[in-house]
Length: 116
Length: 111
Image (cartoon, rainbow over all chains, first blue to last red; front, side, top):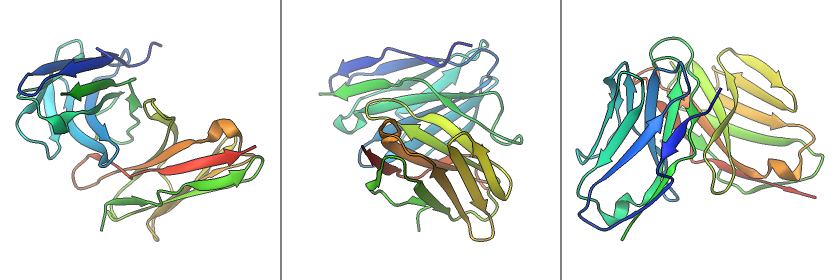
């Protein structure tokens, strides 16, 4: 099976711009989660989608948003970029929703976002 | 108190030794526990998951879970230099349904 794919892999933006990142989960996986990883804060949960519905949300400002399509592909959007948004953004797919039994997440390669 | 705590390390072991990585968690109701390996510049890779008290073995890796003491550990036998990476412990919160990650322990295996 093909793994989780994320596009683009690298991105450079300037403050105030917006950005959209894309994630395609493993075939058959219906849950997609997004994380931000920085050296200082580690891996922080952004949100999770299952069947096109946001099932869980982390403690990030409203500038961070996401959505999921009927084919389980997901996008996340960050508006009005700030310098502190520079990070590795990781997408993870799972066959199940978090509240249902076991839960294994498989990560994509990530998108490295640099805000200047 | 952090929800998931790990010693940041680095933990340095000689090649061929057993590396022991530990993780404690605060949510007593948690049922699912995961270990990820992350090489520098790469994304986390799931290497073990454990749901029941006791040990779970997979090749050179053994995950140990003690719910009463609220800790989970990862043992790596016959450590190899290629095992040098950051190991992330993750716990599925019973309260929020979110996967909570520790800060990770850096393991260095010296030839």
